[in-house]
Structures are given as C-alpha cells and as structure tokens.
Image (cartoon, rainbow, N blue to C red; front, top):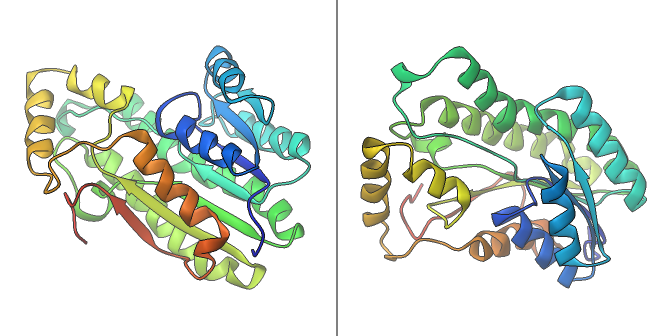
Length: 250
C-alpha cells in the first residue's frame, strides 16, 4: 500500500477515539464511512466532519446488520483501503457479578463484530490491491485486568485474530495491526467511573500508576491508529501498539 488512504471505514465513530480517527483521516484527504450504533450520533458526527464523511448506523454485534453496513459503506465509497474496528464497550465489575446476557454483549461487540466486519471487507480490499486494518484492543487482552475478565478475553481474541490474519493476508498486501489504548478521556471511561465505588477506586488506582502521569485524549489514540493504517507504516504488520502513558510495557 504505497499511496495514502482514500476510502476508510471507521466503526464507533460517533464520538471519542473513532470520531478523532475519522477526522484525522479526512484531514489527510480520505472519504470516511462514519459508523455508529445510533443514526443521530452518526449523522451528527458526519455533519461536523463535513462532506467527506458518510454516516451509517446499526448494531455491529448483529451479523446481518454488520454485513449490510460494511457492504453499504464499501458501495458508497467505491471500495475500501482502510478499516478501523474501534467500536467497543465494557463495564468494570466483578466476574461473579456478571451474567450470560452481559457476556454475550461483551463478546458480540468486542470480538465477533470485528470478525464479521473483517470477513465482509477483506474480499473487496484484496480485489482493490491491498489495504490496512487497525483493530482497537486493550492491554487487558495481553496482561489481564481486574473487573474486566470477559472483556480481556474478547480483546485477547482480537489480538490473536489480528496476528493470524497479518500472516495470512500479507501475500495480498493487506496489513493488520492493533492499537491498545490506556485510560482515555472518553464517555466509556466516565460510564465505568460511575458504575460504583469499587469500580471508581480501581480505575483511579490504574490512573495513578501511569508513568507519564496523564490520561490520554482521543486524539492521542487516533494519531497511532492513523499512523499504523497509513503508508508510513508499510513495513509494520501483526503488531500491537500500546498508547497508555507507559501503564503497560509488554
């Protein structure tokens, strides 16, 4: 992939890291399909981002909806050379306090939705001569995390998926990498801080352990995503880049 990104799909782009990623890609000249779970969020983001942004909405954890959204995105863009799987969700809570519906949602949003998205996009990406996929994961998937057991399992699955596909797709000139954000100022962090006193205490403790003594902004994560997605990273595939202020050094 020698040229810059011209056609990108970004999931979870209604706000936070996904929105900042879409904005960076647009600033570099790409058209971006802005995917969000709810239409008002997708349309508001696209209106802010301008005419190069195309809003699409639906639940990516639903396999039929996922396939329809990815196909619609590629059709409106005229193909695809970059896929950013950013959509994700979790709550910080004890494993024994969780139940099957919660596990199904965690695995559906954070793992199987990524599998379905990639499976739909890859044929068109290969047909177009290659491209890049960046999956937003978590170091919880590499080192584990209290209160995030099933989420860590799902993100660990995405890391393994990414490394396997990086090997399998290299001959098609498709690169696959991961970005693992640390604590970042997003609505998900705020939501987890509000789960209860125990969750709040765990997150505050984690933030205090950041060597660089600061919580990341969505733009910090977006910068890493766009770098790995673009031509300057043409020799990088199968890697996990932590953007955590040094919280994890794996």
